[in-house]
Amino acid sequence: MAGNSSRQGAVRKSKKKQTGGSGGKRKRGLSGKGPTPKASDRPGHPASRRAARAKKSADREGTTRREVILGRNAVDEALAGGIPGIELAIADSASEDVRITRARAAAQEAGITTVVVNKRELDRLADGLPHQGIALTVATFEYAELHDVIDHRPSGLKDRQPIVVVLDHLQDGRNLGAIARSSAAYATSGIALPNRRAAGVTAAAWRASAGALARLPVARVTNIARTISTLKKAGFLVVGLSAAGGDPLPAIDPDILDRPLALVVGSEADGISRLVAENCDLLATIPISDSAESLNAATATAIALDRLRNR
Image (cartoon, rainbow, N blue to C red; front, side, top):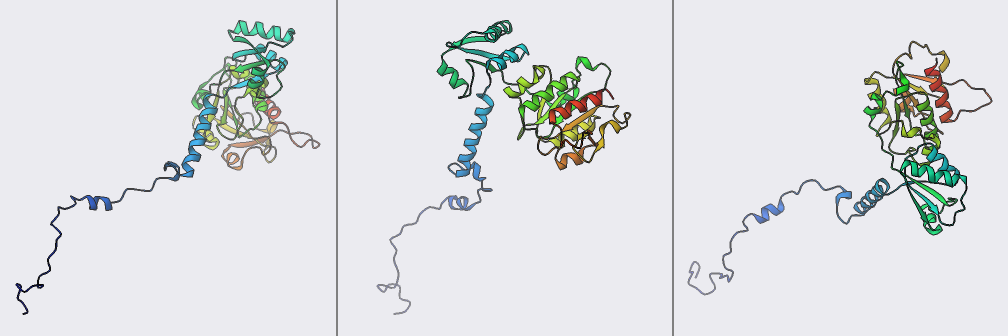
C-alpha cells in the first residue's frame, strides 16, 4: 500500500555508517599552490640538471683553476717583472741553465715556494703543453670595483686629469697585458672590462704586462653601457676609439679634453659596439696610411694615451 512505511521493501536501508567530515582537508587540497617554478628550479628537470652542471663548472673555474706560466724564458721574465706567483715547479730531469738559476733566485727572494717534481707531474700541471722543465703557478688575480678605479690616483699623475681605459669585449689576453703596460706607463687610473665574453687577467696577460698588472687596478663590470653612464655621472668625458667615422684625434680641441677622460677601446675584430658608440660623448680616430687596414688594439690604445697625455 502506498505510503505504508511498514511494508517490506518500502524503505531503502543502507549499511553505511555516518562518518566525520574531512576537516577542510579536501578544500585545502583544492587551493592553489602558487606560480609554477622555473624549469631550472624543479628537481629532476633537465633544465635543473643543466643549471647544476653550469654552476659546478663556474665554481670550479672561479675557485680551483690557476693560471700557469710555462717555459724557461716566460718564467724568467715573469719573475723578473714581479708577477705574483704561488709555486715554482722544476722538473728533476731539467738541465740547469742561467734562466732556471735566475728563476730559483727570484722565487726565493719573492718568498715563492720552489718544488722539484718528476716530468709526469709537470706534464699534468702544464695540461700537456710544452714546459721546458719549469712552470710558475700564478696567484689568482684580485679584481677591483669600478669605484676603486675611478678614485685611484697613481703617483705619476701629479696634477693632470685622470684617465680610465674601458675595454669593450677585448678578446686577446696578450692585448690586455700590453694595454695594461701602456696604461701604467701613462699613469692612468685603471682599466674596466666586462666579466663575460672578454679576456681576463690570465698568464698570457701577466706576461705581456711585464708586471704592470700588479700595480694597476682592473675592474670587472657587468655592462659596458652602464659603466659609461657611471663614468659620465662621475664627471668623465667618454671618448670612443673608432677605426672610422670619428674625429681625427690630433684635431680635437684640447680644451674639450682638459677634464677626466674615459678612453673606450673595442674588440680586435669588431671595434666598439654600436650601443657603446652611441653612449660615448665623442668618437676619435687615429689617422694612418691608406695602405694599412687598421691598428692592433694595444697599439692604438698606446698611441691614443700618448696623444691624450701629451697633446
